[in-house]
Image (cartoon, rainbow, N blue to C red; front, side, top):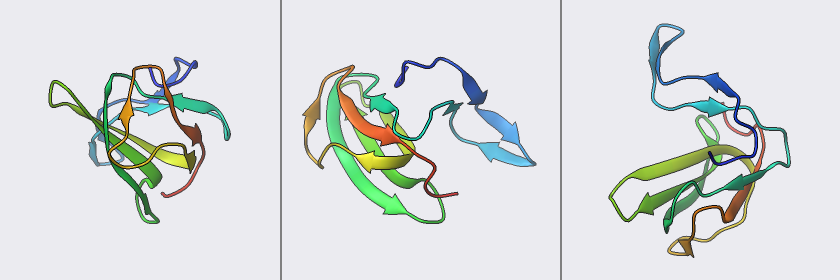
Length: 95
C-alpha cells in the first residue's frame, strides 16, 4: 500500500454508472504517500479536471502506478525510486 492507512474507500469497477479505473485509499491532507514498488518516475503533473497533482511510476515489470489528488509532489520525472520511498503528500486536488 502507498500509505500507512489500509482503508480502501472505493474499489476498481463500476461506480456511479461508469468505470472506475483504480482504487481510492483513505488519506488525510499531508499524509506521506510512498511508492508501492521500485521504479522510475515517468510523470509529475497537474490536471485540474482529473487527478489534480499526480505522479506516475513505471516499475521494472512494466506495470505503472498512478498516485493522484496529492497536495505536494516530492519527486521529479526520471527519478529512480525504491518501494517505500516518499513520493508525495496526500491531498484533495483535482476532481
